[in-house]
Image (cartoon, rainbow over all chains, first blue to last red; front, side, top):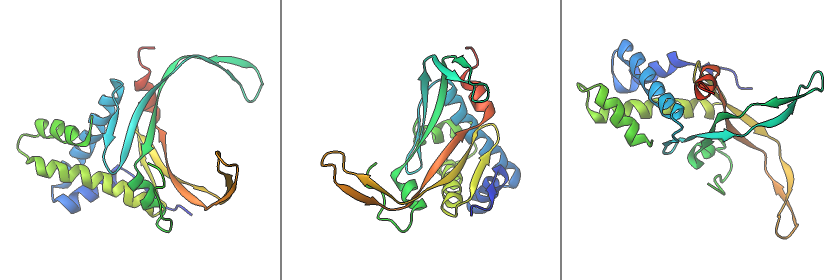
Length: 104
Length: 94
């Protein structure tokens, strides 16, 4: 079902329509918002955006993986990954029919 | 960092703008992402990541305490996939 893909351009348009800045300024600010979030995560900090969700950086230790094609075992190096935890409000908005948010 | 701190950091870099306006900008962006997901659309932000909606079919679950069968309705869940550049930036020095 999911038809359309929303991109930066659509977010700029939303800022332009709702806040009334010029298109250039809207684009600049959308970029700045993403940059600030990215910089924060790069420092390993959690970003909590109320009524939207949280971005959390997790550290993963080394583990053994498998090349699915050859079946060969390969070590997966320790790394940092980022996870998004949607807020109860966001989950509810995506499930309009349900009573929603049994748990946080 | 929480939303109000994000707003402050952006306002500090745009001294000619009211903090209230910056707050509206942040909310407009997040609101647009939520609106897109609730329509079932994908949101793709190159270098950052992509938000999409995954559909989970109805299933029979168990109450782990009592073991009783319970019907779980079908539902949709928001999903985020980290972008390539973001993944690289998280692992730059290692």
